[in-house]
Image 1: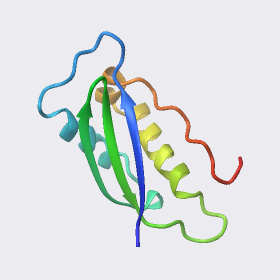
Image 2: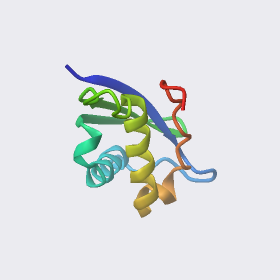
Image 3: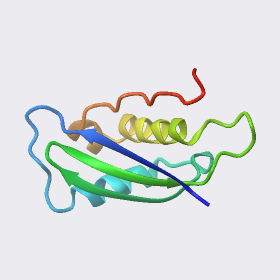
Image 4: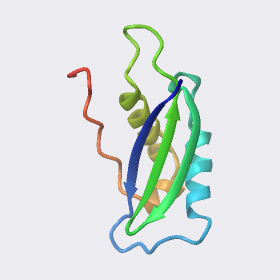
Length: 103
């Protein structure tokens, strides 16, 4: 069983949509910054008007103190954005995910 998280990255003001390879480049950067604790099983991306939509399939969290799926997805996207010059130049930083655990 996997958990599904949908999220988006908004283009920086003044940037134009990337070439036809924009979604593939973003996914490559996402996978490059994934760690085993993220539990990422599959990711897909689609360009939209002024944004990039991501669909992430993650394994359920292990153990009662493990971060929930939404928090892990948000951390992965934020880490990828922070460490990728391609994502940093093209997209605004992602907003933090609301925590289901109330943190």
